[in-house]
Length: 241
Image (tube, rainbow, N blue to C red; front, side):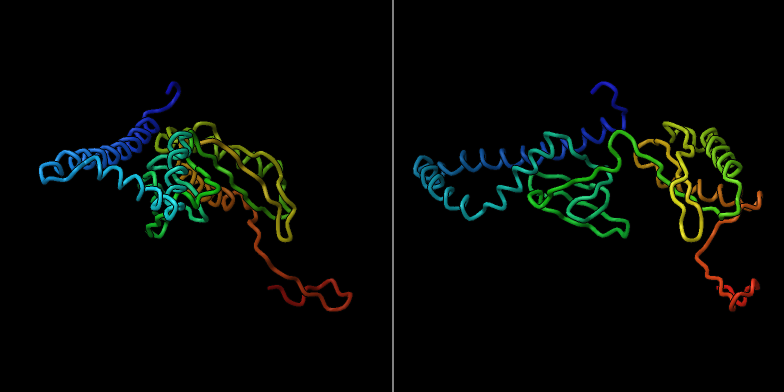
């Protein structure tokens, strides 16, 4: 576990503890039943033989359940995600609230709880594994000086990364990666930077607020979709929506 922070270690501990408690409960129940039944005159040897034969029939009928358990085992073995991680599985995104060998429980942004059988999970996307990332596009008008715009963006990012309220959430200071796209209404500039797990959303929200204020101060245009209509060859704009 070298290199892991305390939060990740705690998440893994919570996940494994939850699984082990459930497994221990099942084992204790089985042992208790086997111990108590002879007191009522039940022949344990015959019972186990009958269970073995019945188990084959049950296993055949419960193939999906077995598949869930096998998938759950590998999810835990490979440490794909833990309680507290934000993931996307089976087309559902949310916070992992519980993991068992049979199913994974997610709570989405609307607070809906989803129980996903592990056997249905073909692809899992963990958005908070080790670290997260600010991946933000900002659009400016075609008439803007891009060098000036990039300098302003990088300055705002650096100021935020030094802010006592936010600095502990950053791993690397966000900065402009490139001019990402020449769109229909404006020029898109891509900003990237690494954050502590699950901190990217709050950081991007605050960064948008700060960039909007900075653009307003500097007179930098934030474009929106609009259409200019001309009449014939006249250069005068008749209407603009």
